[in-house]
Length: 262
Ligand SMILES: C[S@@+](CC[C@H](N)C(=O)[O-])C[C@H]1O[C@@H](n2cnc3c(N)ncnc32)[C@H](O)[C@@H]1O
Image (cartoon, rainbow, N blue to C red; front, side, top):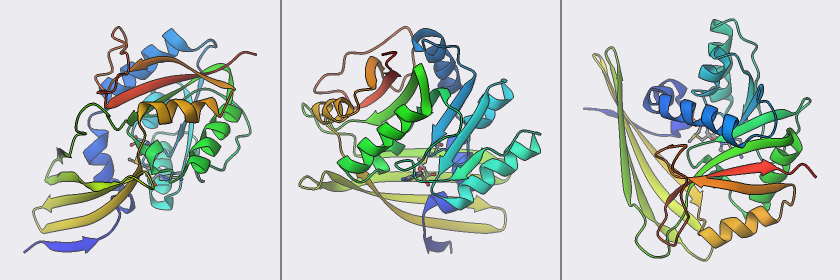
């Protein structure tokens, strides 16, 4: 019989990092291509709001960038810093709210790839986040922001699954939409994470809330932060030579926001 616990997957950084960290290459190469194509400053310093375990920050740091991040979850931040330390890198992840923070030295680029922005529960917190990001970036710097929009011309995707293995540790996950509260623009999601080792079977039963965005709602949010402009759009295939035009049927979008020079 599997043991079952109701908990947040973010409280299990080792399992989270295995599930989502093994698939880093496409995002890493896409980010570097975005820095080269869209930033109007040389990208040396990179920030990730809600960095979690820092699965991408560690790769960027190893490639020679100065990196830092923040996250609400102290366990994720500890995991991230421990890995930095293991590779002789400064421990630059901090516990902070991504809608209420300041940085001491500005960054040239930032990223937030997999829908994490939608954890911000309201228009106010989302706008506050974009204002913090604008303040944290040098002029000409970019913020690469990946989200799932709610399509208005077709049904949104209802479920997703991931699976990963390292040695004897296997982690499978299944996420499904439980429905959208349209009045409050909140999508309720279920998540099961099944962990297998030779001596243990554990099911983590999680529940998440994601704020919904239709294309027009995202555009009107960005307009509230006049320091930022959208300079290009891609999808989650991360093809730098294939920007997309966001339509009423588009679901996954990577927005490239740039801090205006004046
Ligand atoms: C899907 S994970 C993404 C982690 C990392 N960005 C990645 O790509 O693997 C979402 C993260 O957002 C964090 N988070 C949620 N709300 C936050 C907030 N208001 N401020 C900072 N972090 C937040 C969670 O603790 C979690 O680590």
